[in-house]
Length: 193
Image (cartoon, rainbow, N blue to C red; front, top):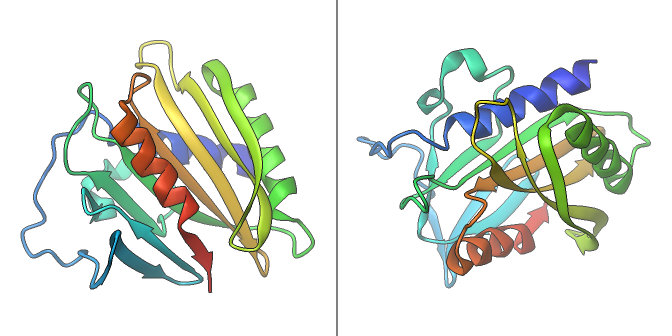
């Protein structure tokens, strides 16, 4: 039950940022400090990855406080909207059994998504070796409530020493090739420290 609430809270957090207006970060305190050739290198506890320069890290307080059930590890938003939606990436962590693998936790997350979201349609589920772990990159469309818009999701998980990291990206169902390419780029440039 706790896991279901966590995932529902995560999806609501991601969805809440989809229709919000892009707000500048006046003091730029969450801006990444290292640059890489193909994007911006981001380092968080236990994770390192690269985001395209068209994305920026945003503060969690840019989401409605009531929807944040847990503090995310990081939240990113694309600087430009696509089909009226600012694509988002939310990275969260959750304590899990020391013995669970990324693939097992990914399967649990996938089952929970299909059971709790409306109009859920799986587009792709590819097992892939990322950051030295076999995991699944799941792509699907769904809505959190009957009156919410249908959105396209990408999701993967990693596990390190009893902590699962869930990466969830969301965009318009008709996201253009540039957006989908940027999201795939992020998912393919993740490492575990």
